[in-house]
Length: 78
Ligand code: HEC
Ligand code: HEC
Image (cartoon, rainbow, N blue to C red; front, side, top):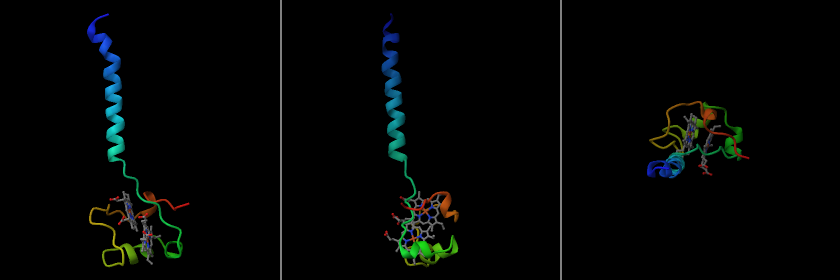
C-alpha cells in the first residue's frame, strides 16, 4: 500500500472534524419565545413588535433578520 493510501482515512477524518467544527461555531438557533404573560397574550406579529419593534421596550438587535414571520424561526418555549 502506498503512503498516500494510508493517509486517506486520516484525511477523511480531518475533513469531517472540520465540517463539524464549522457547523458548531456558526449554528445560532433563534431563541424560543418564553411562555410568560406578555408573550402568550401577544398577537403575531403586530403584537410582538409593540415591544420588539424599533420603538418598543426591548427592540430586536440591529443585526436581527428583518423578516416578520416570527414563528418561521422562533418556536414557543416548553
Ligand atoms: C409586552 C411586551 C412584549 C411583547 C408583546 C412580546 N415580547 Fe418578547 N420579550 C419581551 C421582553 C421584556 C423580553 C426579554 C425578557 C427575557 O429575556 O426574559 C422578551 C424576550 C423575547 C425573546 C427572547 C427570549 C430569549 O431567550 O432571549 C423572544 C424570541 C421574543 N421575546 C419573541 C416575542 C414574540 C414572537 C412575540 C409575539 C408573540 C413577543 N416576543 C411579544 C417583551 C415582549
Ligand atoms: C429569519 C429568522 C428570524 C425571524 C423571522 C425572526 N427572528 Fe428573532 N431572532 C432570530 C435569531 C437567529 C436570533 C438570535 C440573534 C442573535 O443571537 O444574535 C433572534 C433573536 C430575537 C430576539 C432576542 C434578541 C436579544 O436581544 O437577544 C427577539 C426578542 C426576537 N428575535 C424577536 C423576534 C420577533 C418579535 C420576530 C417577528 C416579528 C422575529 N424575531 C422574527 C431569527 C429570527
